[in-house]
Image (cartoon, rainbow, N blue to C red):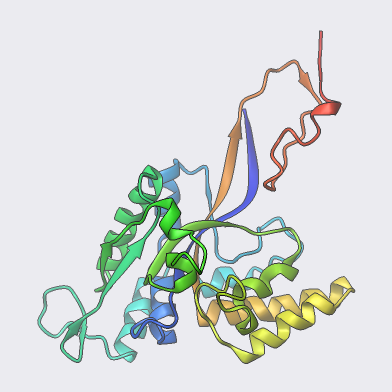
Length: 270
């Protein structure tokens, strides 16, 4: 039995164009209210590991600073919501502002049992800080459809979206996710985050060659993403593979290439 780290990041996208989620304080509060250890243990029996950023902990571009910025802190989460003006004035457990309750819809793919369970755990966690999370799921073909086909992610017709994204080993692809130059339909900046400094950093990182220079650039970019919180990282996928003991030269692959990438080099021990 092999536990193989994968580069798939289960996370939440927060729609920064939404009237409530355009407030950075609310987004930060949602990030701090998530207990990733509880998600890992309840949904995946501790096999999938907590994610605090979009660089895998084994990546040379990983920075431990994101762990501190996104650590589970419900007290701080509640304080940020207070600062944003969301207060539970009637004592019903749900915060209000301007007479409207702090109610947000989470969406994922219908029929995915583990993600539906994740929604239920998140609903409990967010309720502890006064946020009412409702569920509005979509068929795979609707959630991921193209811009012209009215895709939920690409058209921005969601509030919070739960899904997994492949994070390539090299961070140069991050501009497609966070740069203001790659808003749909031009790219996959599904959260609609617009941060000038972040956009410039990601463009600079893509042009840079030396690791030391790139590491500095992407560390700052990671700090900005954590503070702006357009996404809430949840868990890193761990793939479980069962192979015969006699199989030699099996080498797992963390990317979408799959574990049979070097099958031509396998052999069975007599």
